[in-house]
Length: 106
Image 1 (cartoon, rainbow, N blue to C red):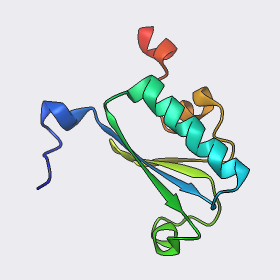
Image 2 (image 1 turned 120 degrees about the horizontal axis):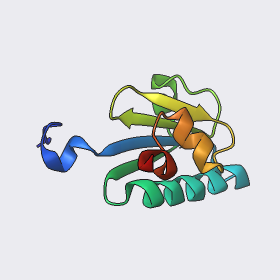
Image 3 (image 1 turned 90 degrees about the horizontal axis):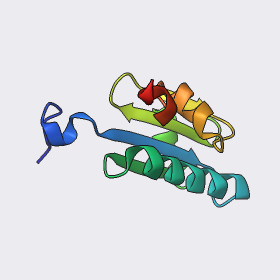
């Protein structure tokens, strides 16, 4: 059973999909960084799916992924993606068109 997007408990929920390349150090750092960013900015309001492009190449192909790491924001729309170094929280938030905590306070 799926929940409606206009219900208050799901309206401000974020869905992310992180594509990584196996257990390479860069991939492990990306997973740790994205989890930390999600907890800091969306605690209790996000879902994070991690996809290894080697183990699930069909999912990577479906989303047009040819390199990793890449982070996709699936919801709320519009879909956005950030590729490359995923250690800089401000760059990631800007790339996904999500206001940082500092910008939200303005």
